[in-house]
Image 1 (cartoon, rainbow, N blue to C red):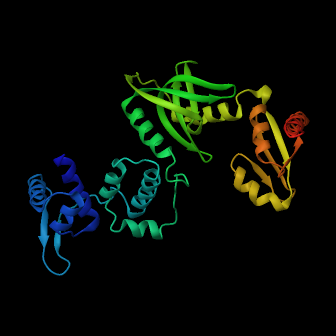
Image 2: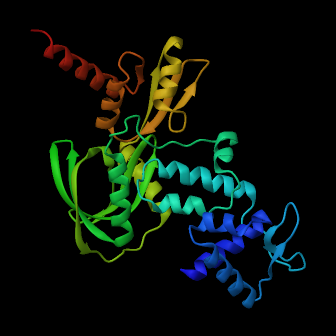
Length: 310
């Protein structure tokens, strides 16, 4: 604990040049006496922390002492702060607040207000269970706890025993990368489809995997791009008046917009998924090809019409 605090003092003095004992005590949430004891220990370790007098005086590292100030640049610290603030929106633990407080940025509010990027991963609703999900799942991942989840599938619900490894935010949704005991392989579980979960005290033995495996699994599981015989290129036609809605709804990463011809194209291998997805676009886009997809959408529309015939 003390060695960690001494490193924080050193890091703060590197980036701020001069700080009073009161400022250091407030930053570290300790007494001035503790600060002076840590500074004495730093001096004994060969880091000359001295007191500078005058208007801009205070504690600082001796100007004759050469030290690498490239731990983190100001811009690097700003980027880290933006990322930590984004994660803090969905994690209620004090760990992130403590981490942010340790960053030697003179005015964190100024960094956020004047920065060029704001990332907010939270829900529009304050009482949304996402905060508890993220916080609890992160704890389970760190502690290697097995989780029992009740998960929504196509035909109803499935109870799974999973080993959680990573949380993933992609395409406006949260996923958990976990090893599923039922199928004996890694899967991505969409958090919105987890009806309930229970974190067990039982631990699991960590299995080897690569970060690239997660990206490949996303394409496989949600686009079926690994099964070449099922892969198809979908082309949609839309009216100019609906363009803004469609760009906002679909994004331009997986979906290619031809603004001149007012068409959208993308690759998928999952027919059921794409039919459901297109139904969500309502009357804003029409399937041009393949004709097999066009027919399935037409049948789905007819089926819906029958629900309201009476």
